[in-house]
Amino acid sequence: MSDAIEGRLTELGITLPPAASPAANYVPYVISGNLLYLSGQLPIENGKVAVTGHLGRNVDVAGGQRAAELCAINILAQAKAALGGDLGRIKRVIKLNGFVASASDFTEQHLVINGASNLIASVLGEAGKHARAAVGMAALPLNAAVEIDAVLEIAE
Image (cartoon, rainbow, N blue to C red; front, top):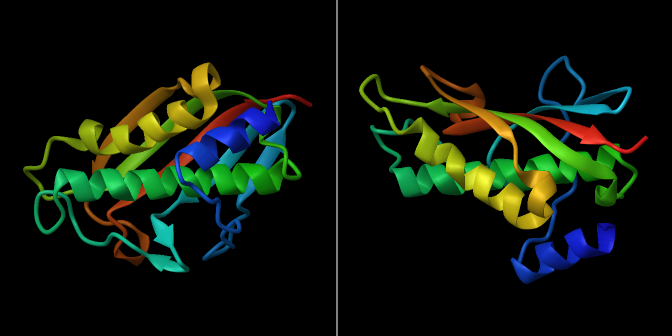
């Protein structure tokens, strides 16, 4: 299955970056039994936050979706690091929690987080279909437009 996942990434033109190091006092992931908890991932690209600001103020939905896609790519990169390079150990993405830096009247967080949901489902197929939250926030770390964390079921 890992080869199939790598093949889908290649088809989509996605190269996973190295897993990001924590920016504060936390660990990037925790494995407990058959669950992999991934800390929140920002839209990091080439070592910096690629999409900053607030949806409904200075970032449009398409920009927010791009930010969510980058978060999903970084989720996969962290999962790959946590699983010793074997994304085939992912049995199911259980839940994504999407946080969207939003102007007070912005109400399309669900559309923004679709960027991550669609990418995860495209890469992982049926195992990528997940429960989800998409919530507006006053601000996010490093002025990121989006942050997403994840819970995955893994093969032990």
